[in-house]
Length: 323
Image (cartoon, rainbow, N blue to C red; front, side, top):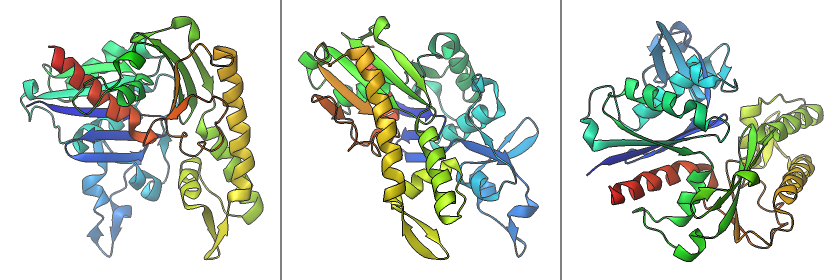
């Protein structure tokens, strides 16, 4: 039986879905100072589990980079597939899935991943080659469009079988609210409708930046952009050890961003009458759920933060069924 691994390298967070479990970590790396990771002469476990050795340098990954690195590199460059950040995040993702270079028979492994609409044509072959170089030249790698991960997750069951054959043949709109961008995709009969696509700069990171400034202005507590998501989940920020509610700070920022999303969607799909179903997904979907009610036939993809990566696995499973 084949081992199917889903990897979603987002600008904000990386997601890994495999039989090793689900892993989510910030898309952040930083130089590793081994001495700084020692407390009372003992080596920090982060040195073993959240470091990658690349180009003769050792890097901390994810939460360990946030906690221990004296500076961090974020995944933001337009050509970030060429960067050390991207390669470190990809290698660590493969390692979390239990895949190491030349340690598995390639015929038993499939790696499924996705690329943004703007990067797909120019970067697909490059990404396939990079993954094969890290694991094995004969490895099977499947790449789809990033927002289609949620489409596959919504319409396919865990075995890659279509749940609703009538609806999947219709016209489906997808709003994928990411960290730095929000994608608007239209799919009909499993194919993109090219004149009904859009990408807006400024995903949840722009909201987090505003909230971080509001928190600093109101409470004097500095929060990095990649720390604000946890503040939203918790509903508070700690000030002198006391929990301070942030709902009044957060609400207007989320509402303003939701209205931006609505404006773009209405330019693309008008009143939505020509769309059979509109799916809302991505890392920002849960935070905005109570604000995005402008279409009556909207469906929020369950566990939207991991919907794309879970959909990649289902997508690869459906291809295997037809091999």
